[in-house]
Length: 278
Length: 108
Image 1 (cartoon, rainbow over the protein chains, first blue to last red):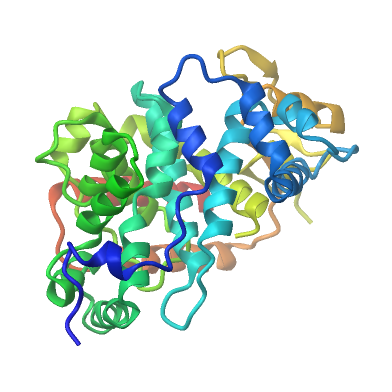
Image 2: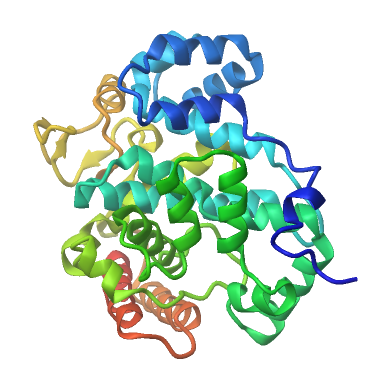
């Protein structure tokens, strides 16, 4: 059986759930000055599963405290809106796409995505880019892999097999098997989900950002490389990809200046992973 | 028996009462929240979490002997060689240097 073409992917992936409503709301709120916490609280309160996950995450994030957190309002007071939003984004996506088969283990997929999101957030704080946009772009950067797996698991397993046995980069193996890679399929899914164009570009550019003139594309690419270099997410056969010097230069990154934050990135990652039970 | 200590970085929610800060803690605005050498207690954790502190540096007992440290360093160098295996561009070499330097300093 031949692999589905890029145009056929969406039709073949009818088992792929749509983007959770709360995630769509939070992404839209990034651009909306009128977005308010009351609407977010409403989204949390109408979905008991989200509220329960948020409370569990908040209690886990604050395990050193003597009192337990019992309401969404307390979570906002304790952790602050930014952290709450990141927990909701990550937990909603992880809960929604919880595939676990012999060839594709969703927790490992999300662990890597979380690693990239946290690197992106820390780099954004250093380089003056919107940290929330960086976090969500990092979290979603590999969604093309979900689409390809849902559309044709056997071809994804074939590409992964080639990757592991011959130690070739995943995008190379995907191009051999599918004729395109997860950056391209990610753009297709981002488009179908109506994600903002800068997030769509960041997904499309995360392995090869030079042709895109966008700070968020550069940032997500560098975060992908840094996440591999710090070994976040226990990726089997982890190998650090080439890093675009142009991307580093465009966001004004100097490793000498940024490396003192590596320990903080690892602490944040461990904390978030524990919080989300990943 | 020596009282050797090492510095480790943790999220405030993961630290324990009685740990000692190795470095001052700043909030998001860059204001100092807690000074170095402060002994942490439960109200301080809540204050740090509320003020958006992501990570703190604390002193923990270091029970390793020289042989253990050497083994850890060897392990780190081997892991860096593994994840940076094969050819790579200049940007990747710079990242490798930064990560190696960080890892070696963390172990020592």
